[in-house]
Image (cartoon, rainbow, N blue to C red; front, side, top):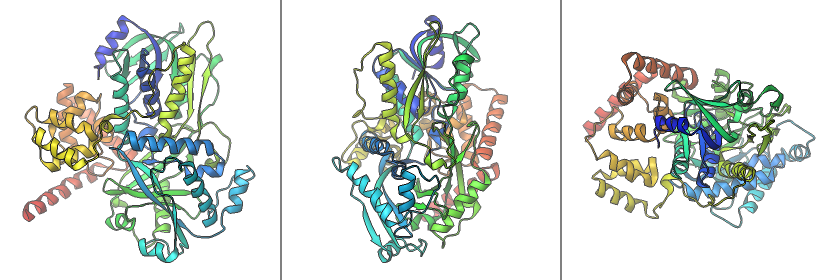
Length: 583
């Protein structure tokens, strides 16, 4: 990646750009990549870090949206299933099939309500019986019949269901199993998309921790939060890809007479990461896609050695600083107690929690499940030769590529340009040249880089075929172990130097899965902080301020306090002692 000072110096010398994309979430990065690959002079500006908002708080599902069929959103479901299958091919290092089982508690329940909801006569959620679920899964199979990447759905009776999942609610009458997919490292996939765009050439540039603002004379500036500088910019076209922040961003970009009013009306979804072996074993490597007693859909599946469970669906007015509140956590745990009543979860087993805002179109519907999940673009036209602003409305993570393509094609048309590169079959990052024989590829990596097979496999899980680059950097200089034995100093230095890391949370929450997987200890946090502070040449005061800020963020947004991090020091020490004795 080009260094931020090089980018800012380039803008000072030549402030004209074809397109400025505001918002470095998955949709903003997607349209940036699309435009960069077409050869446009395009700049991406993100106020915080890349994929740090809603794109860091998704359910980790890559799916067609089975429940959207009730709303009649057949086009969205079909598009989502196509994009899901493309991700399985283009990003196989991060996106994998996920067998999904739906416990069924009745035969006919929800059938009539599903029809009247489809006709728009009811807004209320309701339980879904076997017939309604069968109808939805049959449509799912029909929409994927030509590709057939995964097996068709199947039903199990009560006996077979409880034999495979004995901990399920004994009121289960039957179950249905179908296949969707999940993503292990969504934030890393966003970084790889960004790098794909940046490799298109020097006319593609990106800045995190920067804001684009309108000034009094109608022009625009880039405010760099790291270097505290202000740089003028002259875009021909602006794309507002800030998701739940779209209306707020328009307020900063447009004069009052051009502001389009409320375009977005997001809902908050919260999730928990739980470390409970009995819970993980009870899932039998499936996702359980279940209804709580109030009809709200919840999910539960194995994730990075733990279990992910969620989510809520609550309206929010301000997307900034959303967090999983105690009542949301209690609701999720109650839903878990309903579907798996024999498993007890202690609060200390909730090792991480996160919350994000779904970027939904503005709606007055009292039932959030009825708000459309589709996406579209609207252009706010300029006056007196001003700059048009395209707003990307809605969108779900699974369809980021097709949404970016739509926004890019609209932009290209406005600028009189034509598309020259397609991304439908373009591999992403470590999905390039993905091996059919993974074990052989890892063995070759281990031999060539001089690392153990275990280390090679670990790097492959994190980076796919890009593991070769990371491993090469790792052995190019003296390396030092870290308090977490899965990481070394050189690997973390590679991320700091090559992936626009500016703050501690960039590294511990997004470039790695240390925090979300519940594996971050206080010793590891401090060791990574020292490494980052040395690279950034921070003073002692800056280092202390960053430590305090990160600990506050962990506590307030993710439910992890300093005492818990300290306790993990002791847990890891005991684990190391046990391993040494057994060896």
